[in-house]
Image (cartoon, rainbow, N blue to C red; front, side, top):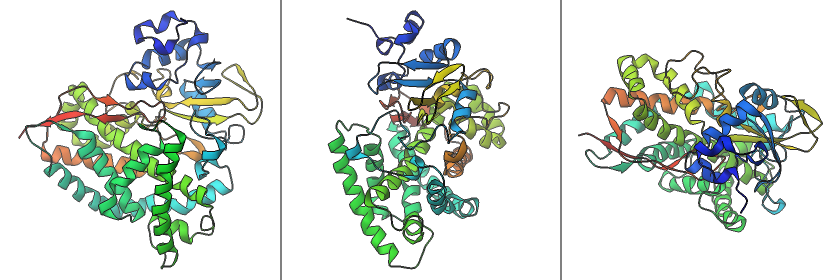
Length: 408
């Protein structure tokens, strides 16, 4: 039987021909064995062509500067064919502003961006702090529990419900739809489509309520009253809902989990933070870099172009592995270590670059910042007491379970 790198453990990565390297298999992210594969590509073939994969042929960009060059060149590398390595069948395709170029992209993005603008974040900070205190106060003491479910998901889902002005008692539907949208435990396109049609039906009811009411500062009302979005087809409405739900849920919740894991793996960094709480903002940026909650973004070349000395042809699929670029030692020193006070700590790829840079990045940072401030203020010692269960995904880099315990 022919052996592929996807079947190899990290220690075996150096023994396989470059032509066989396929870093797209989700299992490698689930068992956390992907790192040596990316390191080899960065060293030996940073712009790497994979002919055979479950997703068809694709180019891997694994170095920081190459990724930035492509991410900031939306004319040659547009996103209209999708932003994940998966080629979505036409039947299930949902447009959204992240899959659009100018001018429509900017018009739709600008419709929702005021919800996460600095002025609104200042209003939200007290609410976030109160919610975090309530969540932390309600956690078990001297007993194991799943940090992902009781903290990471709960906090981000509460925030999403606020941004959408979504019925609070139904907020866990947002988590359910987010997981379905990115394929967690969904084994067919039809099943995914069925679940997301329920999402569309629910939000259509909210849309109809908001469009017949005075404009408010929530995402549904903003879209319902903006000329750029009020006439969207249902598939486009669903596409933008998925974008906003996944962007506000999966990414932040996995950095919240990753931060606790990393502080346990690097206790000297936790001591450093406790000794100097002013490092919280810096620590948040390092958590987001080290976690890289979105592992990749995909583009397709609109013209022949040379990248990193390699000829990429018009139409080729190009995958920017943010998770690898964030470990590029040429740009980020000691990149494989978690260092909360490193120089240029905000110099990471996790939010992307260019016109598609994450619209909610400041809200993500704010939630993490307030969480760590409150953990420090309460002097809570969150101990990881078992191995994390990671998501089997090459797109969302995250966790289902992180078993922890807090001393009483």
